Length: 345
Image (cartoon, rainbow, N blue to C red; front, top):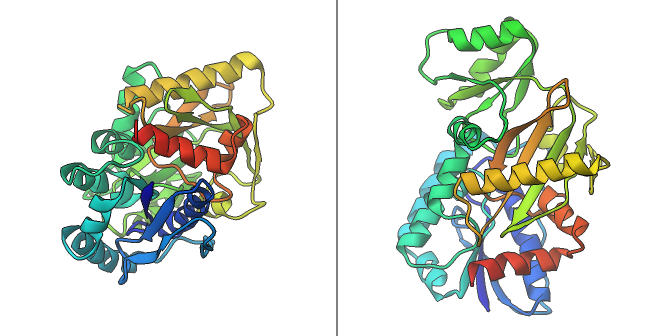
């Protein structure tokens, strides 16, 4: 097939997306497809291609820090222009399928998916409604709780709030908390605060772009993640941390954490996590032709809480979804082929 891979984009996860796109391109070429790498936020959107089996693909490295925030407005302007005209819309319409490897921002909140839907373009992953439902962490957790998926207590700190909201103050006075943008990915701008004074010091940095913050109690237990491909649940992965939080640097630097797949846990507990991941996948509207990855962290008593569901989880060499696929006996190329086949059924 002719497959256009969308990667890069305008979000803080731009570098991660470029690395995912190049990895996906190599895998699809291995399977005999013709691919075109497209970054809709780049000055020249066609990064490589058309590439055919046997062609080399340039790799992208993920830096220790996400791209600077001041660059984002320019990237957004280019990305909007790319979808409104120029060569990109025609390239998308001419493809047999578009592989969406855009993480975060417009690539994961439904913006891109809505435009692909309106253009009648077939694409991988969740539709715009499911992406939007999963992207806003507070609203997603409300849906999950209603579906019987355990989530922790939480409080919103609105962008325009004057001072610390009472609900946030109450949480931080009860113990350490984790604060993060309510809509962002790859643990971008996630911080632990052990006191109200520390949270007040961190908040202006995290809210510099008008971000609404989600504040939750810090969960001191073990951390797990579970992928769902179509209707198949992958083996549980345990993330063994040497730091309090699984932040951006830990996620994308080899050796920063230990990731064990399948997790060394009792069979009953593994089955429970898998059932919760599938329930979360379905509750947020991810259909049988999509994929997702649900993240869990346990409280002090060992009870798992769902932190979020990722609509377009990373597909880099060190990402968790490919690790879960390997635990199921799939190669990386198997994983990409399955994702494509779900979209083309």
